[in-house]
Length: 421
Ligand code: HEM
Image (tube, rainbow, N blue to C red; front, side, top):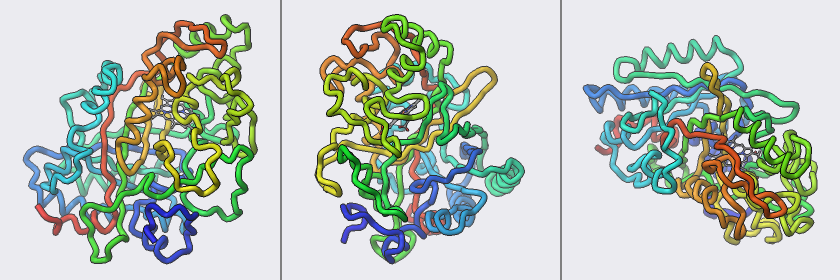
């Protein structure tokens, strides 16, 4: 059985899955539930020696929480690490990660220039580089401070380190992003749940094979083939313009003569509490398009529909048939003075999965002809109302910076000093 592409629902008790969980960074595939998420960005010093860098970075393997630990031991600090294309080059690792070579700035600018026209965060200016990201997640600020100090004494001699602090604003049931909507609800499901999932009424299937998020490790650290996996992360600092959001809500509510909460829900594609706009099912994930084929309740141009129109609805439960690309989202909020936003993070087996979503956002004819631009990820401009009329809304989000990273398997990280050059 190929564990990555298995269409069977894998149990975390299967021996091959256990091995995978021990070797894989937990942050990638398990929801960690911590409220503070600190992102340390490392810029290797130009004079730093590749062997010294490798040796120091390999010591961070002791800090990494595996998926196995995250599921079984509930550690209070969750740590994960990823390397960017420039970082891997300075470590003199083989340039086998074609995806990382061009970096997020160049790759997203090819999809639409507006993804980089506001790229002005000093940490992320286009010419700048970021070599590695270390994520620390905990509920305890003291613990984060002492972890950061520990990592700074290990890596400070070879890297400049900056911190991007993220936090989870806990709503009643889910995290809440700065426009006030429940977020992180719709995620692919990789493992059998303790209580067997009932098929959704519409037969939407959130289950996804592991090759949605994991790829075979390019530089394994052990001799056991097929047990080590890594994942690609897209990190984007997304500033959210709350005043513009409020204006957009007013424009839509005036045009439709509806209350502001409903107008906001039409932009996002869910209510603030996270309910789908076409039938609210118990776990908030079943949008029933068959009750709303013309998009009168759930607009085709709303963010949730642009990102996941649920095209796979109706495929047999557990089917391995083609599904549109999905990804695991781990975004958290940030606040820089008066600016607020989302530190968007997604994990996927292939960065094309992330880029497909950015592409859909700016295609007026996705998912249907005339759907319009995504109100969250588009440039602002026309938003298509459920009745087909268009209203002009301001821009709601600007990307301030970001990068692509590869999160290696834990044995690969541990054996970094002896990896080929
Ligand atoms: C500040 C920027 C963003 C905000 C405020 C935002 C907000 C939201 C909200 C409120 C939801 C609904 C809750 C949920 O299903 O979890 C959602 C869903 C989603 N968003 Fe975003 N988002 C942002 C950026 C992005 C980006 C950059 C991408 C990818 C390129 C993205 C992809 C998705 C996807 C895939 C879903 C799930 C759709 C589904 O399966 O129903 N979002 N977003």
